[in-house]
Length: 227
Length: 227
DNA sequence: GGTCACTAGATTGTATACAATAGAAAGAGG
DNA sequence: CCTCTTTCTATTGTATACAATCTAGTGACC
Image (cartoon, rainbow over all chains, first blue to last red; front, side, top):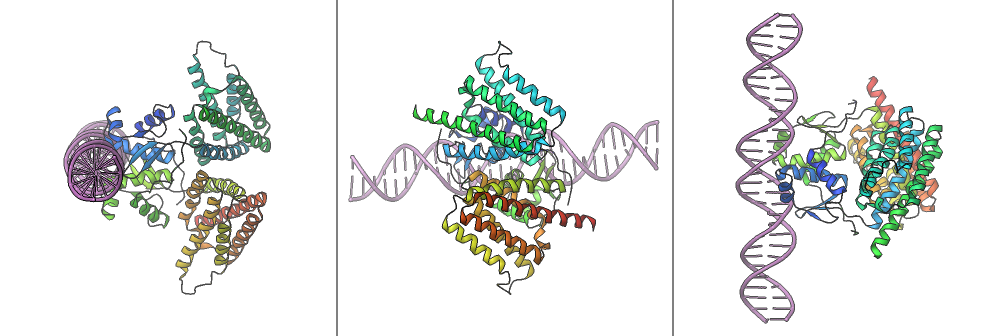
């Protein structure tokens, strides 16, 4: 009855592809995902498409109505608020746990990421678009590293799923230098608290960091709605 | 881009059936779930079986290894510990939120459930087996009501998924009168805190309640392993 | 006797054909 | 011109056929 748990089974290639496409905005929210069209596009039959769609539904990126089909999930303002509320709890808890479990290597990685994100002027060769993508990646890795350091596989998985959602809003595109500075500041504080093994503070700062992220996204959404 | 979110799509009948069977122990942990066998048993083709299995994998009750097939998920002692750690955070947060959001009707329901669970001697007509099942159901509804009262659909969903897992252990079978009394006590305290709108206390008591549940299950597992 | 390659059976992954359903378009009646 | 019914089309849900893959067993070779 009791046995080691395995790593998550490799989700099919086409699941990954669709997920990418959705997160990158190739398919707009509420857009219907017709199975045969997807099948034709991806040069595959409907069967693996259907499997991928049910997996995406479980991930929360797609909504399937029986006998009516799948559509890219859309998020209301309330949804976003809910999601960030959860993120604050989950990531806060992860930071708390990580404080007493994080390894030297992981801490070094955090500091590296913090440094890199501060020197966003590192490679002038990048376009704005590329820079944003890089930032999203680096930020994701920062939070991901802490999630891993919490040493609770389920918690890590929940965080990954919850964190990715707001990406569909492309909120990062509106990041101003000011917000960038503040965000980096919190990253530094969090890293410092983890380095010091201060669980309480790591949790608190992480929560505040997430809450400010929520405020930012909510503000951006409101402006978008008004416009 | 912004729209109301719908209620979760009605999961297929056979998904429900399989899930039930697993939770009730009809299929043992690590037992392989061969598609054709299930198809024959449920009088249906492999197609809906496969769909149900991928959904069950997403729920965490089944493990699918590519090209090798599905098996009922087994949980190690570490897994159980992780799960209860998460439960404490999620249900604690739910209780906190519920304190300022719960309705009069929901509060009444909680008190009713608490009363019913205390009078487990209500119907002498039930067998021990039936009584356990009833208790599991009532306890699930108690926690479920609070999850709903937290007014965060995602949080509610996560709790449901997390809470059901330990059911595969049938831990309730080992519940002694003493543990029953303690558990009921906490249910009372939680209901009281919610009634009073005391968010802080609701969270704290809920967390302690969950932690004691973890201790109990871990103890039961250890004894089982030793035996 | 042990180890490796290989074949045979079982099981999963994919493609296709068909049935059921939903939604739109067309038509009859007022 | 409006409304209700009916038909038709597009799309999803299910069944089945076939291909790919894994596992176990057999036998050759050392």
